[in-house]
Amino acid sequence: MNKRGLILSAAALIALCVPPARAQSTTSSAPATTPVTTEKPETIAQRKDNQQDRIAQGIQSGQLTPGETKNLETKEAGLNKEEHTMRSDDDGHLTAADRAKLNNQQNKLSNNIYDDKHNAAQDHFGNSEVGQRQENQQDRIAQGVKSGQLTAGETAKLENQQQGINKEVNGMRQANGGKLTNADKKAVNQQQNQASKNIYNKKHNARTRQ
Image (cartoon, rainbow, N blue to C red; front, side, top):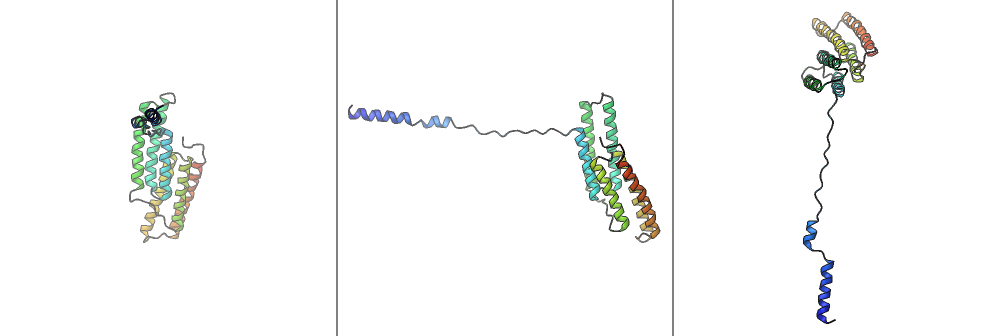
């Protein structure tokens, strides 16, 4: 083979070994796609549990007063009763319209919980014996709400009782220059003893949050 033939053969071999630049550019990998994750909305039961947990936290922290808790739990008890009626009308089930209505009502209640927990009204019981007793009762109620031992209706009744005691304590203090007499302390302690029994009985009866 002559010299020219050798040169042409070498050029052909190089061309076969080196792929065209255009071919490389057209085979670049496609951009990666980000996987889409979707979360299921809360069920009616999960929504109720979440609301109760928020109320329990507000009671425990003092952000919710007994009066505010009573009002919130009265609304929750009303929603629970309405849900029960809806299920009774449809063989234990909830229709799509039922769920939408309950969800809208829970949205309103959620806003009420937020507003009550972030307003200026808060409980400050102090370090006195009476104040510590008040705080202890609230802690016990909060625990019952959190655990489900107390229904919304039961909590509303207990907090109504605590609200009444607190108003009486405030009235006693105003009548005596901000202090409680020994007779006042004795009267409040007796009322709290009865309230304590009520809390225990309602936490240990057959009714629980559904």
